[in-house]
Image (cartoon, rainbow, N blue to C red):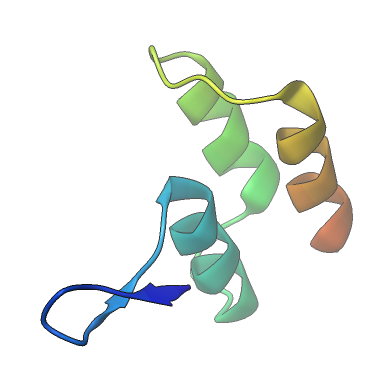
Length: 57
């Protein structure tokens, strides 16, 4: 996260998914699968790292 012009925290889409997963609000694999079905683009390794960071029960 970084600070925006007004001093508030700024994070990206994957950061929001990471935060929600840490709070157990969603399953990362489901969120990533849904995101991949859109026009959102990033390196596949970022998706893979996020999934590996939050193994599902």
